[in-house]
Length: 103
Image (cartoon, rainbow, N blue to C red):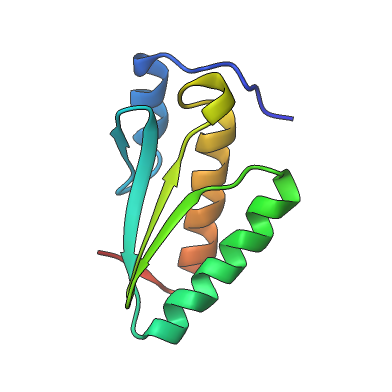
């Protein structure tokens, strides 16, 4: 299981190099995707929800019609951990597998 130790800013910066479009915003990392339709946005959320449930680590999700924003933080650690980085990478795989484009 990935470490639940809070990452340093340098570690986060290094990890985000490999996660195109993901940005650090305070104690979280986030990215927004724009889908073709509201139903496509819901489908992405459902697929990510399944992946998040499988690892028992859940993102904050905002849906604005066709735009979906994922925000990841390990709240009980007060910041970003390897769990967040790994889930962001999984979200990218899901999005790319569905040929979704970041906004």
